[in-house]
Image 1 (spheres, one colour):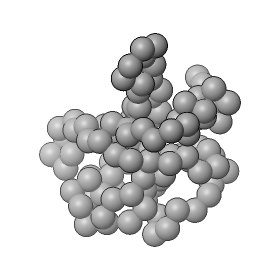
Image 2 (image 1 turned 120 degrees about the horizontal axis):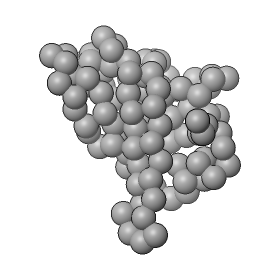
Image 3 (image 1 turned 90 degrees about the vertical axis):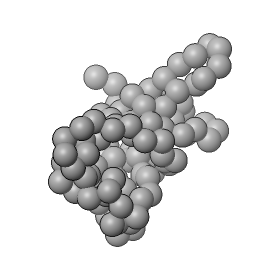
Amino acid sequence: MTSITDPEINAFLTVGTRTGKLAYASMDGRLLVTPVWFVVEDGCIVLNTFHKSAKARALARDPRVTLCTDLEEPPYAFVQVQGEAEPVAYARVYAQPRIIFQH
């Protein structure tokens, strides 16, 4: 499995401004996909959401997520990152690659 610290993957995630599509389980178990803006900080995907939003509450209940971002023009490409979301009051840097969200 490739890591987001891989130079090619990291470059894809950090060059330019891309939105990601975040997949997660809603409170009733349905799978949802929502667009998010994100940054990569020291091996972590960082995104922002209001701590009382339905997305934040669902992630607190079930932190399993998948983030997919793509290049929507030729030569077409995408990166998919799977992990667990970790709520933090402010983006902190962790040694292990994680998907974290600020609130």
